[in-house]
Each structure stands twice: as C-alpha cells, then as structure tokens.
Length: 381
Image (tube, rainbow, N blue to C red; front, side, top):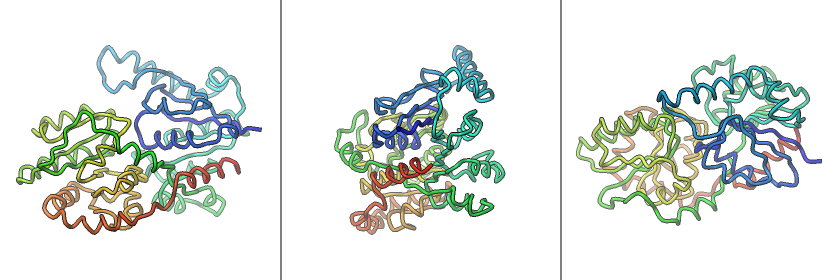
C-alpha cells in the first residue's frame, strides 16, 4: 500500500525551501508514495520541475501580488480572506478541496504552516514539519510559540543551531527524540552541469572584481546592507561590481535604494533566474549578507563551485564553512560586511588558503543520503 501524503507550502517561487522540496520530490520513488502537494498560490518557476506523478492542488492561482496598487487590491484581499477562512475553518478545506481524503502523513514543508497542519481535522494522520530557519531570529517566534512544534510527531531541522534551540526547549527525552537533523537534499551534479551554461543578460567586467549574491529579495537577506557597503567602498576608491540574483516582495525597495545610493552602474539586480550557477562560476566572490538564516543552502552551491566566500555569521555558516577554513566569516553587521569585502578587494591573496581547502573538500552528505534519511522518517512515522 502506498503511503498517502499531503504536503503544504505557500507556492513554488524561488526560495531555498521551495527548491529543496522540489529536489526531494524529484528523487522520491513514485511507486512508494501517493502525494498531494497543496499550494496556497499556484505560482513559481519550480512548478515545472515537480514530477508528473505528484498531484498539485492550489487555493489561488496567478502571480504573487507584491504591490499595493489600487487595481490589484481586490484580488489581493480576496486571496488573503479566502486563505484565512480556510485556515480558521479547516473542515471546509478538507471536505471540499481535498474531497474528504484520508492521509497517512500531513507534512508542513516550511514553519509558516505550523497551524494549518496542527489544526487538521484528520486526527489519525502523522504530522511532519520541516524547519529551514533559525526561528529565534524570526519575528513573533517566542520560546512558547516554538514549543508548539513539539505537537508534531517529527520535526526535521537543517542545522546544528536550530537543533540546539529545540533541544534546549524540550521538556523530556520524548520531545527531544522528535527533533531530527537532516542535510538539505542538494544535487551537486546538477549544479556543476548547469554552471557550464552561458551567462545571459549580463556582461562580466574583467577589469574589476565582481561579488555575486543569490536569494529571495526580502529584508532577511540583507541586500540593503550589501548595497550600502558597496557604495562606501566605491567612495574609498575600491572599484568593484555587485550582482544580485533573485526576486521577492522587497525587490522594488532595494532597487530604489540602489538608485538613491547612485550605484546603478556598478550594482545590477538581475531578478530571478532558474540557473544562477554560470553567474556564480564567473564571479570573483560569493557574498552572503543575510541578517539570519537556517542553513543557507546557497553556500553549499558556492562551495560546490569552489568560490571565494564571504558570509555573515548567521545560523549554519560556521558549520558549513568549517569555522572559517572554507571562507571568510564576518560579524553579522554592516561593519562586518564592510571588513569582509574590503579584505577581498585589498588582500585577495588571503583567499588562496580557502581555495586550497576547497579543492580538497568533500561534501559531508550527498543527495542520496539526504533523500534516504527523509524517506526513513516518512516510512517510520
């Protein structure tokens, strides 16, 4: 008998959690599970990558509305009200949209769906949660709220830091046993193959170094800090370029800041691309300017491509960069980003030791191990 699984996530837009979920789905055996993937919004570039045996369902469809233009407001309000209604009265969702289907496992692919799964009218299903962020840094997540995740049967976390947070809040061994650390499934072969493709819509300037940063454009990623420091270094006469790849609700704000800083010539916001790897490969440095993370998978992508890395000291970074053996870890502040970028521009030879360590580095996991571990959890629930 195939296990029946309901997976919930907001959309399949360009975030790390979305990419990781799709990578998992692509590598699950189709004869073993029957999966319904329920999206709040049928949207995102990763939709095309979901295997055809996975049944995609949705509450709303169309692109995400990130502005408050008067003509967009009715649709935006309708979507929010509809989603809130189904969240408040889950029986309507399960009766109408899900056709009273019985699931063995209900799986929240991101922490934001904690309540949707916990409030499910299906009492017999096992509840599985996947946490990709350091919740101590996320607004509204008090220790009391984080403790509610112990109502799940299993909680998969992606870094030591997140695991430590949960273990410190656990009241007994039973709760501790619910927390399991999983490396994100990452297809290194796919990264290497895709990095060979040509760069489009951007001319790399070989005269000056280029720093690339990839991520969803919202405040967590600190692109505002990156641009502010970019301007400061230019003012000091240190010529370089910054390339930001990604889209998100803060895109227009960050773009406006870029213009206000007067760096439109040297800082480019490329928007979303489903293949950022050729840009990684050609850039001189990869920079992570995040304010907080869970376990920034993007750094494993940079490590796979043997890039010179500068990263703020957020959750997962020390673990991934082996306490500074594989790249520069800076203080999590504008000052830290400034010092890291300045070091790269004034003493690039200091990165040679990272390069020799990167050449001999072997990933602490592989795609098959990660997928097998998640399958083991699913099978034993």
